[in-house]
Structure formats: structure tokens, C-alpha cells
Length: 74
Length: 223
Image 1 (cartoon, rainbow over the protein chains, first blue to last red):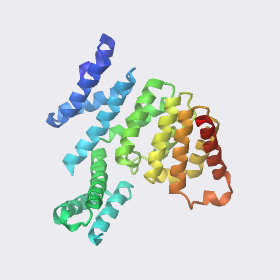
Image 2 (image 1 turned 90 degrees about the horizontal axis):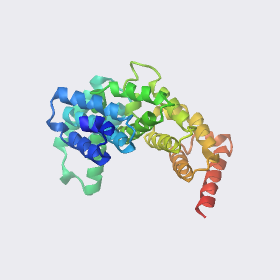
Image 3 (image 1 turned 180 degrees about the vertical axis):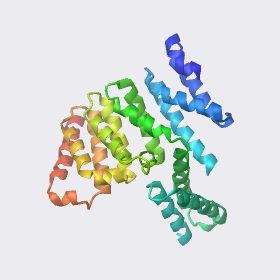
Image 4 (image 1 turned 90 degrees about the vertical axis):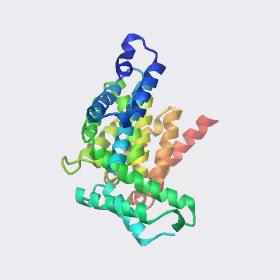
């Protein structure tokens, strides 16, 4: 998540940041409650990233978290 | 083939999505849905697509509603971001996220905390309508895409403020951007489909002329 969130400031390529974010999203089912909360907080922070691909990724993670939580409860 | 029980479960689930039932009713409907999932199987249906469609509809409604309740802070966070209209980067990201959420949940994201804070869906709508006049093309287009899904989802705030929504859309008829025009026609066609018999049509031909105008502009552009 650090790569996704702060990679822009350290010249990390946007595709690398995107891949890291998707990895986080796809592994969400293996995370515990505290880790999920951290991802949720970071996902909101991604919405004001300077790169539109990373901003879209933030939206994708938010939508996925909501869908995933709903599936687990139902 | 529609069984009475299925219709009842679906209708109740849809009402839950519109925030018209309390938490107990939602839980009752989740139980009903569980029974539905175990009691009825594929062999009850003549047509596989009907079975898949109904099960998907039921699942999406229930999943999105419970998922949203598990993260109530997201609604206020998005609304706060939307109000920072001068921060282009933040608002573009927020509109993108909102678009994804309304795709999944319909107007669930707007109505989830309606009981606790009055008029929150209207605040969202007001913010979205503001973006229709935003100088950035992507923001205008994104706001329209969100509005289109809300219209399709039969959102209650759209029903209440339909005239205001249509007037805001009408102002975009003079927009020179082709992308905006394309999405404007799409959004207006959504209004036509959903509200064909609404009283706005009884007041004259204003709306029809808006449609004609926007279509003509698109034709001219296409040529």
C-alpha cells in the first residue's frame, strides 16, 4: 500500500503502483480486521492522487471493500 | 415462471434498498433470501437466464446494502470531498469512486444514513448538479454518468427534484464538447424512459425541444 500511496513522490512508475494496488485489493480476503481498516483509510486517500489511474484504483478498492463486506455478512 | 414467494422476497429487498425499512426488516429479508437460495434451484426454471438474472438482482441488492452498512463513514467522506469543488484532482477521484458505487449499489450510497441525517441524498444531488456546470469536461461527464445511473435506479431524490435535474441538464444543451453532448443525450433518454408519464410532459413541449436540440447538435457534430 505504501508503494501505491507514496510511489508518486519517489518516481515509481504508475503501472507498478497500479499493480501493487490491485494486489492489495485481490488479497483483501486474507486480511484481518485491522489490516482491512488500514486499506479502507488508504483507499480514500488515493482519491486525491495526482494520477488518474491511481484515483480510479481508489474507487475500485472502495467499491470492492463494500461488495466484499456485504458478501461476508450476507 | 414467477413464484409468489420469489416476488415477495424481491419486492421486500427492493424496498430495503430504498431505505424504507428498518434494520430488523432487512435482517428478516436476508433470512428470506437465504431460504430462497436453498429452497429454489435451477431445476425450478424453464429459462436459465431468468434464474441467473433474478438471483443476481437479489444478491446485488442484499450485498450492497449490508456492505454499505459495514462502512458508514464512506458516505460522509465522499460528500465532503464532493463539496471541495475547487480541488479538481480530489473531485475527479471522488466522482469516479461515486460512479463505481452507484453502479454497484444504485442509490444505496445516498440513502444509507438517511434516518440519522436528513437530506443527505439531496446534498449529494445538489453537489452533483453543481458539477454539471464545472469548467472541467471530465467532471461534467462523470456527474452525468452518476446521474444517469441514479435515474435508472429510480432514486427518490431524483423523483423529488426532477424538474431541477432536467433544468440543470438543459443548461448543458449549449455545451460545445462532443463527449458532454453524447452523455447528455444518454442521460436525457434515461429520463424519458423512467419518467415518460411524469407531469413535466404535461406542461408543454420544453423537454421535447431539449431532446431535439441536443440530438441535432450531436448530428451536426457527427457530420
